[in-house]
Length: 401
Image (cartoon, rainbow, N blue to C red; front, side):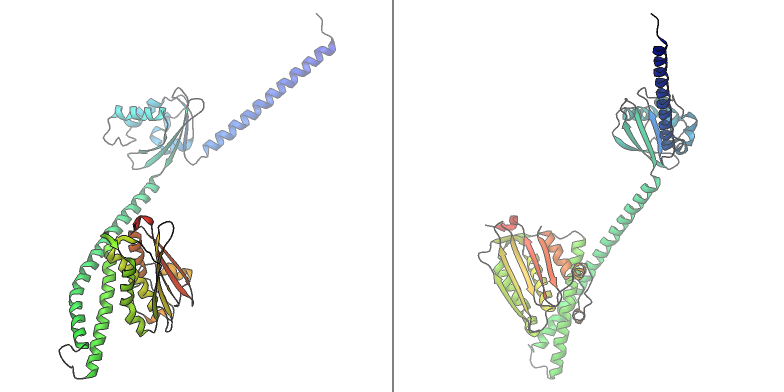
């Protein structure tokens, strides 16, 4: 059958368009491949693509630079198992007591079943992290990064941390030992000063001597309090804060703690009162620690409340079974920053009012540690020149019904 000239011309035009489209597509593919090769070449890590037949399809120069003793092998078609064998034979890696064949089998099995990352230790001391991923065509993609410096930094940090922990334990042991040695003579000093102050063996004679004895007693008591704080911190840091749990009667304990701060409150013209919402269940807790928690909070409240102020210790329980103990005062208060500082060991407030009082700055940090040991919550709310509220919230599992 004969084609008309117009028909032949149309078919020729269609073929030309087709060939032009193919040429454009090929050119675009080449450009894409060029961009891909350029991207792979500039990756900051070693890059390799292995085919489903476990032969090298493509790698970048960074990989050859990471493994210079193997660079001559890294050309398309290289068998993965052969690369491993040469790696061992040329002494590139540290086998870490594995046999040559055993290491090769493990490496081949891991490459066939990629599962994230592993590390390769080289005989020159470097550490390479290898990330392996399965490709859609059944092949494998490897990404190798030199992590030697990062691992060394991690090792140095761990070592420094271990050294700091050793030093901290030694410090705590020294503090505990020295504090115990100081307590014995201090107790004697305080006891004899108390006898002299109360003139238990008869009149002293000069009234001023009695004042001196009272000063010795008060100073000794203050020093003993500081030593006890240091002992508590030493026990906390040494991990020796063990709970001796027993049922604790909160109303009775709060009344006892209030009596212990009454004298100081009276001298400072501060009113101390309790607010107990009955019935309050007993708590399963360490009685000594509980008493110390409340005494620390009450003592702080009385210490930092000016004359004519008021301190209240309250307790209540809620519908969820939790029990709260709260101290509140009309004292100098704190800013948010000062609250954070107050919970830092050995940090003391620098306000004009607080500088009038001595102390180690350990009261609240110790209290927080004792609260934490009971699995309880600790909350401080404060406002300068208004006052402070400190609440300890014991979870329901601490209550006894």
